[in-house]
Amino acid sequence: MPRRNRPHHHDITPTASVEDLSRILARHFWKNLEDLRPGIDSFRLSAETAAAWKERIRTKVDRKRQPDGSYTTSLRMNYVDLLTAVRAFYLDVAQWAVEEPSRWGPWAAPCPIKANEVSHRKLESRRKARMDQRTRERLPVLPALVRTAADELKKAQARLEAVRAADPGTTFTVLGETFTKARGNRWSDPGQMTIAFDTDGKRRRLGDSELRAFWAWASVEFLHLTGVRIEEMLEVSHHSIVQYQLPTSGEIVPLLQIAPSKTDEERLLLVSPELADVLSTIVCRARDESGKIPLVASYDHGERVWNPPMPLLFQWRTGEQNRVTSMSTIRKALDETLDAAGLTDNTGQPLRYQPHDFRRIFVTDAIMSGLPPHIAQIIVGHKNISTTMGYKAVYPTEAIEAHHAFIARRRTLRPSEEYRTPTPDEWDSFLGHFERRKLSVSTCGRAFGTDCIHEHACVRCPMLRPEPTQRPRLVEIRDNLIARIDEAEREGWLGEVEGLRVSLAGAEEKINQLLAEARRKSTAVDLGMPTFGQIAMRTSEVVGPGTAG
Picture 1: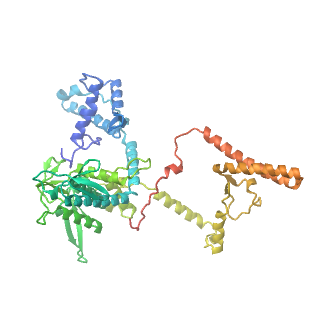
Picture 2: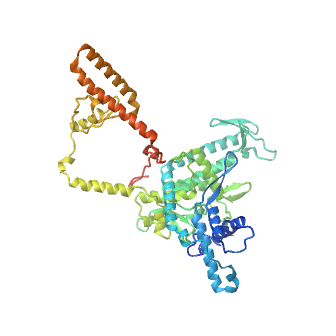
Picture 3: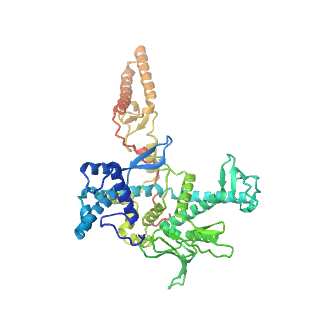
């Protein structure tokens, strides 16, 4: 079934192709039923069988093997999609049984999936929240990924130049790394031999490494500057770079033509100076000795046909032929760049990028920078603007703006003289108040403009909030007060005894506050709720309208 203009299996089915439906019905549905009930030959399922099947497909086995050789399981994200496809299949069979009773009547059976089990409202909300979180995590660190891709390309090119210049069997050093160039065979060209061994004896194909580093850099730059899909990027050819002359000023504007993909509609993107540099670099690399870009035939996995030979930009030469850069090569190159970048999420896990993440980041950044949503819809090629707005990650901008508006309305109700510009002396006095609040055992909590009611006998004051780390100092102060009281009573200084006893009561009260707080924390039930310090591990710089970003 072609990728473009695919009909849905059923009106409520979210799957995208006959292949997906076949995989769901044959593998996830019938294969699991055969494992649960060997010899089953009917679509009529008992309540126990239906419940066991639903429980079986609710989780999936992760492909990554653990250090002990086992595999972990996790909840299946598309669980509702699987139920929807199977429910649609049952409804289709029931409809076919009405139209052709002799053929489909024996297979008709009650659907084991109720309508309320395939509600997509909550599913879509969770999916939107999950995608928004991916975008919020990846948008702030995108510049770091772009820099890493450029740096890794420079390093890979330096290694490639060094290995080509070295003689076979000799040792060379580049970027602080030592390699020994492979000898090859007698028919190989020494200048084209790019295989070397590092100091650990590991075989390194420096030519392939430079190839992946280049396509990682080109893909990161191309995807985040255009917001196109990965299949659209790989279909860009030399013919896609066109020029347009403005009828009013006669200015020549470079444009990039994006071939029809999901929506079967082509579109033109304005080429920015940054994108022009990227395209120029790719074109120079793709050209052969004659200065032309070779024609290569690509296979359309959606249409299941070979495309005619075209001067595609994303191609590479191996041996005596040119090949199209595949999606798997792009993904592998991107993963290697991410490993070099060392980016992590809020949990400390490695931050992974999918090619489609750049599309969501492009839409979010464009709309938050002031681009109207309907223009962003045209640029990214969405038929429905709700799809475009679904790509935009939600930031608390609206709440912040509403709060600012509330503050502005409240200020209109207060005397205007309260909002005059403070004098330098007033401002220094205001700042000095907060500088003088810091004490040896804590911080004074009295408000600005209020006097100290205890004449700076801070240990007596209820506004002193002791810090847990200063408990030993409070104990030292208490012991000192006890010693001074004993000395005053012994020397007959009865006038000081009363004041010292008041200070002693204040010090003991502060110590008791710290002890009570420690007991409360030790007996509290942990609800698993993170503190604010654990949540705010990264500050996201949101680019506002009218600012460069």
